[in-house]
Image (cartoon, rainbow, N blue to C red; front, side, top):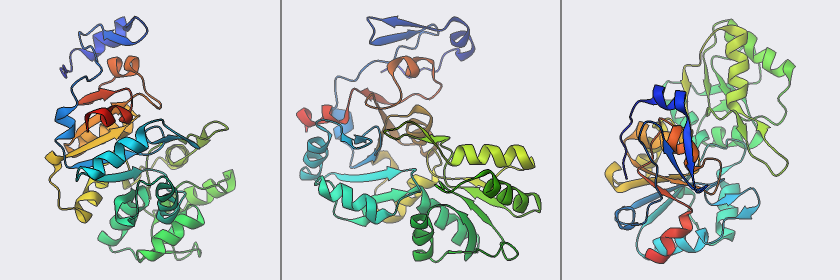
Length: 298
């Protein structure tokens, strides 16, 4: 498919054209097209899957995806599951993936929390004030980073998804940052999807703290940071040119592919559409309606 960037400013001015409600043609000449030949994708060794919007949507499994991933494993391919969701534990994800017959190994699940603990340990931190769920704090503790509840002893702050976030808590964190305490963000997603509608997430907390203090985070981890693929490399001896990233979001999943220099597949089962792809500066290597389309070709 054509991956020429073109003149994005001109595209923004003239917009995009819908063709039969399916394929879009950008005014800069870039026309995102559905991939019909999946053989270059199937030549890869590591198949890295975003979860929400790619494998499932909330509680609903996307039809055909489970069978496609199972077939890949039968063919000797390595499935890996990536998520920015810092609210759950790796074990919670393993339980759900096991129930679908997709995964039996914690090693295959890479979370934004993993990038947090790696960053903290690499920078010599053994404790942090962790604005996050109990599951996130437990994962950090298992990796050697404990939660510091005494605000007078905090030497670094972690911003994760927090179901108990309030204006008072954000103010508390903002005051720590204003005093010069460094902080990092688990991932930049402004919201996470739910069956009831979007829920405020790390990116929104970060925006509030940055506006309050005028201080940027030392690191924003998770997707699209290449730190997620570095976590994959820690666990699997697979070269990046043998990896492919599947996801439904241009600004996280496809952007991760660009940041980490790996190929990416945009799937149209979640947030972004062909029209979005036409106007975006993030260009996937391939576009599929669904991961399920791999099934017939495996």
